[in-house]
Length: 198
Image (cartoon, rainbow, N blue to C red):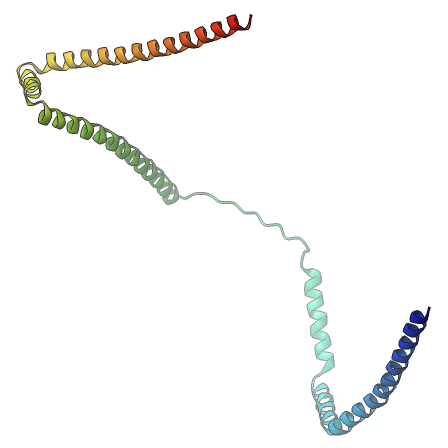
């Protein structure tokens, strides 16, 4: 309890000190205001006189007439103004739109064709590099192929296509055989596992 009484006593002392300070401020502020008013009394009276003089110069009846005329104009204007807006393309505008559309499709087609030619060029470059390797490593078979092509180009191209199709078919058959072997092996392992579980 002693601590509580001490705290209450401290709060009472603080509050009494605060009240005394407020009293000092209340007595000092009117003195400051009074000094301010005394110092600027003459300036304030001059400003007030100029305001009164400018008020007398203007004709209040004319100002009121202007205000009334403005109010009448505002009252006579409609509150909602309907606006009709229409837009149409002129002949030159449609020509520009058509030209821009055609240009867009031409550019898009050109870019697509460039990509296609780039891919074809890469394929040809790879084939040329492969033939260069064969010519360098195996000159006799490469020269035989060149000589055969010179003698009968159509037959050589047909034979080449046939051989490429045959090689592709062999590759597909080998991949299917490998897949079948893998499935057979997996089935055999499953069979052995099932038999071992019995």
